[in-house]
Length: 254
Image (cartoon, rainbow, N blue to C red; front, side, top):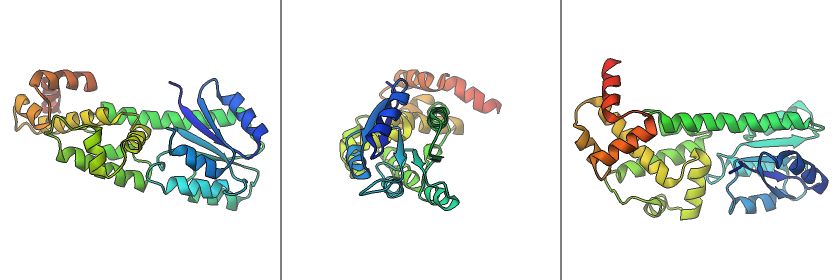
């Protein structure tokens, strides 16, 4: 699936221009103002937002501030487009959490490069977290709000680690969030489904226990919530590219 981008501008001609420039590489959503954009974010999973600053009802600065202070959306990178090229405007945009600030008139190639850079950087961080046995979940946080959310999520998964039936329904109830909202948040911040994140958290805890060298592999499989040692071994190999035994030998050689 193509990465999903939300474009926001009160000028429909600019929206059409941006959509034409970007739709080959991205799935595009559009909104004519900040209020419509915030409503859309309740129902759509978006990887990046490009917004004009000067808009009626709610300008781009206010929109960015709302996004970056909302636990459901604060992980989404925001690019602000503006004809206000004063230093104070740039500072204001960055202070409220904008990830990039592009002056009008702008080069479409510049915008494309900025979008690609933000998405690629986020993608590399997510891949490192998923594929590195001891990388902490906070490594994918991009704000204090994200960090707090991930800490709570991680703590709850560890609390129910030995529950082989832990699923998104139980996780959402424990997080006091609706299932769709939790799903969108986890998917947006980690590029993983809740089920995948639960599985990776199990495997990372298992890797931590393997590195300690205090337990047998079968014991660790049970402690991490896997139904059998074979199931644990297959999952570990698929996620980290090595068997639990190979991982033990690697840690012992360090």
